[in-house]
Length: 437
Image 1 (cartoon, rainbow, N blue to C red):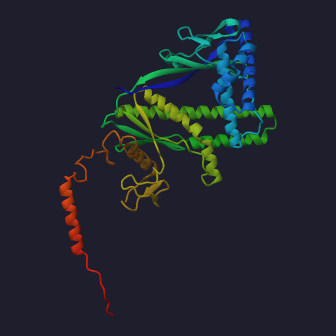
Image 2 (tube, helix red, strand yellow):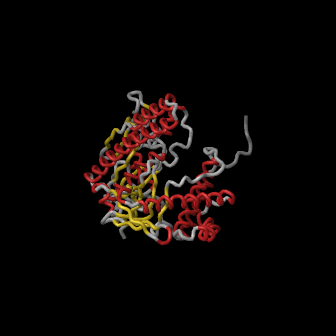
Image 3 (spheres, rainbow, N blue to C red):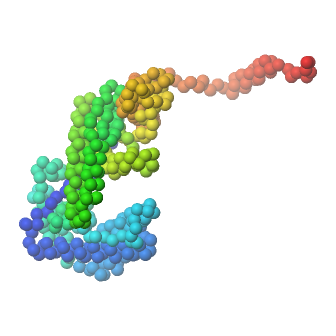
């Protein structure tokens, strides 16, 4: 049976408010105000009773909220319970880490969660209908780009978010789902391992290794220093906030463009080499521990897991759309372990990024070593239970049978055991009763 996976992609649409009448715009603002009131009331109840489960919050407050807001569709109460429970749960986790000084969270009401019963999307005419008070529906026109939005026509829409920006613009963020049928993993399937670093992405296998220079760490450091200067020199709070947001957006746009270029290079190489599986590092605990120096901690914080996860998501869904499997392996020690003999590597005196094995004599770049170790670890972790083990150079090892001898009948085992005891008794010297000096 062919493996089937579901991918999720979020598409953002700007709503054309110039095409909507004043009554529809007034109804949308009234909907935002009432939804904000509902969520804040639910957060207050969750805070006073310590409720972090959406189901428990729904059981406790649904009928009361339904009576207070009888003209509002009932599904708004349901999604508000999920919104409130999720907000309060995040607040509790931040409070435990000492990262929040407020007594309780406050919902600012800039986004409304819409499930499939609260909106209808017409992808042919690019219009959306949203349920409002009194069982009414308002229809709004979506601004779309042909190159970006046309690919979502064949996908199934899921939940959505109606977002009101500070500048008054209204956006609809829709989650689309698509089912992908992936090919089965065979014993001779080719793979590519990817090692993502601060300034370079290295990918390959035992046959080739290529590098893509991103300079992401340099870009992030430059924008970090620019934000530092703005914070120290600009005294006006409003102007400072606008400048910080401006350069934060520029930084993200530059980094995202680099991510897409790197992903395109990797996918093209995978198609060229007839690769079926892409191996990536599982870096969930990238920046949870102190790395030793203040400068290094700052760099890793700017290149944190939440930002690193962006390129992983881009690469994963692009690979699956092209029919490629994506597997994650533990990257611990991949750049410090010799891929040939397994001994610990040391820094070589011939170069800053060269590592040397004093046992087998291997001397190689640490990123290349990491890629080869990821390939090796994939066969050890993911393929051990499914396929025969593969040596480092990729050649299939021949199974010549178990090293343990086959079982013998009980009588033969008993006779051999008795013979072994007799031989041991004859070979053992008698105890020395006297000692002579």
